[in-house]
Image (cartoon, rainbow, N blue to C red; front, side, top):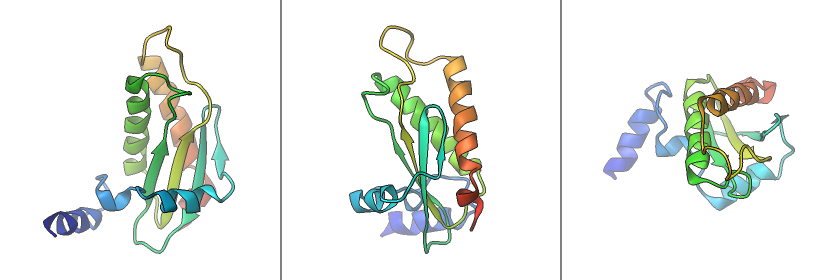
Length: 135
């Protein structure tokens, strides 16, 4: 009960957080968004979006092990995506960002400053899609 109240207070605080109410966590919620066509594509990512009846946007991130073999890389992708999502002015939309192509291999370093810059550029481009801005 206390966590639910805390999440609701954070959800009403302007969206500078990533409380549980701003996440897509249930399988059926992911499935209902995946049924739609992709809204935007970049060299490594695909964005699926669907309007919702909530007063805020929600985010789900899918980073498969086959495209990012190291956990450090997958966690970096999720962290960068959440950071950009929090800073975006999205309203009433469920967004799922899915990694669709390999970003690196097991041979090189797990994450680099160059990789983070490239991820940021692609993810900002995803959230700039018209379907995300309509609210």
